[in-house]
Length: 57
Ligand SMILES: [Zn+2]
Figure 1 (spheres, rainbow, N blue to C red):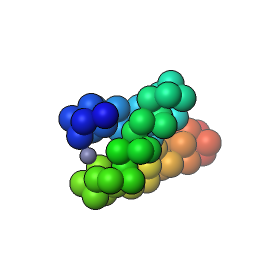
Figure 2 (cartoon, rainbow, N blue to C red):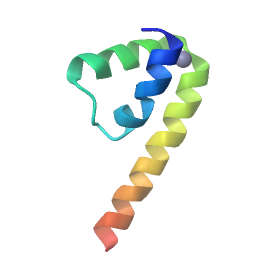
Figure 3 (cartoon, protein in one colour):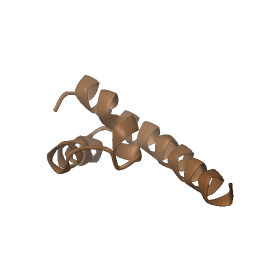
Figure 4 (cartoon, rainbow, N blue to C red):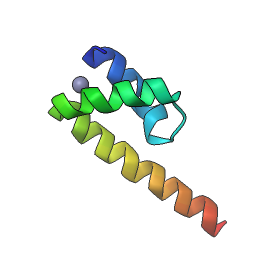
């Protein structure tokens, strides 16, 4: 998977909305790409925050 492909899937990946095979490819890319790890961490935090908002509503 290229960086562009991984970057395009990170939002869905953070929300657990990827196919298993896609998620595995994203995770393989994350292991080798610091830029995507930073983006993934911030998206994961945002997704967790949305979950908390939904749980509190
Ligand atoms: Zn990347």
